[in-house]
Structures are given as structure tokens and as C-alpha cells.
Image 1: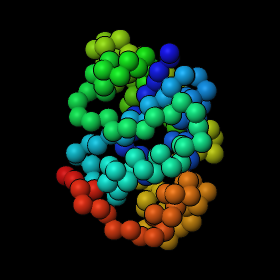
Image 2: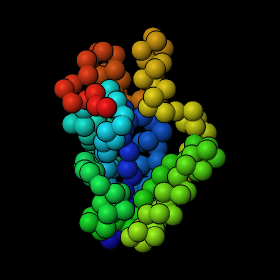
Image 3: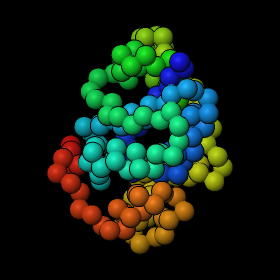
Image 4: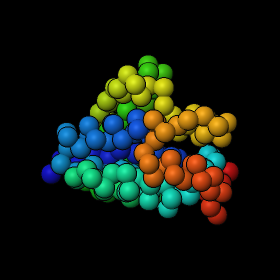
Amino acid sequence: MRRAVCPGSFDPIHNGHLEVIARAAGLFDEVIVAVSTNYAKKYRFSLEDRMEMARETLASLRGIIVEPMGEGLLAEYCRHRGVSAIVKGLRSSSDFDYELPMATMNRQLTGVETVFLPAEAHYVHLSSTLIKEVNVLGGDISDFVPKSVLKRLLAGEPPTEGSRKG
């Protein structure tokens, strides 16, 4: 079985993420969407909420598993889960410059490869940070996020306990 991982904080998951995950599902037998927590970041949604939104959104795709990545190195997570490839979406050359050293280190640590998928042109501007900012300032984000995410963002749900770290 060819297994890949699409790691990320997904705070929140958006259509650019979905497009990359769906394409990965066409390339691999199983794709793990590993929801990570970076304790240096402040999150809008708790880990549980981020996983729930991802599960709701990805339920129609075959071969997708959503789970927490946990603590530690991504390369070690991949070894533990039997993952042969990390799939990363690239929006620009700056994404590539950021991701390449990590891809090289992951390969040297455990042999896991990284597959870069260029983003579709209509998603290259999307980031979770930008979506949250536009939403807070009253902009229409409905074209950029799945319905389950839009519902939560428009409801203005306060951050849940543990969703603000750092």
C-alpha cells in the first residue's frame, strides 16, 4: 500500500488544502491528514475542532484518514505510520524555498520522500491566516472555505479552551 501524509495545522482547513489533499488521494492508496500543533502559534480553533472540520469536509473522499500528528518530528511520525511520502502544496517559489530544506532533512532522517504539488492558480493566494483576517474584517470568504468551516467562522464561535497557545 502506498501511504502518504498531508501535514498541517489546518486552522482552518481551506479549499487550497482540499485541492492538494484530493490530488494526493488520486496518487496514493491512503492519505493521512495529520493535524499538527505548533506551540509557538496561536490557534483560532482547538485541535479537536480542526480535526472535526477536516473529517466533515473530507468524508466523501476514499482513502483519507484524519488524525493528530502528535509531538515530535514529522519524519519519525512517517516512519511510525509506514508513510512513504509527505505531500506538500506549493503556492509560490517562497513556499518551495521554505519547504526544500525540511524535505531534504526528512529524507536524510528516515528516507521519507516529499512530493510537491503546485497549487491551482485560483488558490495560490489562500492561507489560513489570510482567510481568518478577511473574515474578522467582514469580507466574504465563502468561495475559499468548505461549508463546515464557513459556518464556524461566521458564527464567530469564541476560541475553545486550549485553542490559544503560546
